[in-house]
Length: 188
Image (cartoon, rainbow, N blue to C red; front, side, top):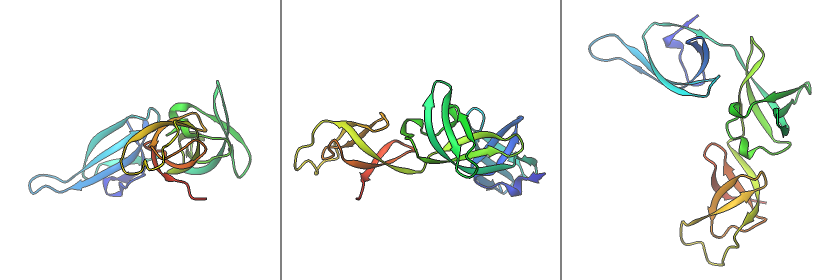
């Protein structure tokens, strides 16, 4: 058993009989009264983010987790299928457990967070930035680089993003998976 002094970003704990991951925390020592720890944590079963304040010294139960590399294979009505890169075992993960399922493409390597005691996937995270090809967008006009105007574009995974006016069909762009925003043109 740990206590509040062991809280750190990324720590997984059991709270209300469900696994939660600490996203942010702040140790507060007011001038009057007892110290406490203010946290923001994500329920790993539902994905819901909540804030909670623990009094200093509160005992917390850590959850043993493992981070494993899996390769995305395909999607069907039962879910998203991934293969372990070490032992080639395959698993199926529900859409709700993936941080940006609209950007998954075959062969992409992802990090899957597992509950080590129960051997079940908790979260599947794509790389922070990925390179995708634009499959459809309105043609750009030469010289459209001065403004910050964006236009819709469809990428190879059929997701729609917003790109600058100078980006054309067939261009490769870097997309931030957390927000779905265009970052830059991909360098060859």
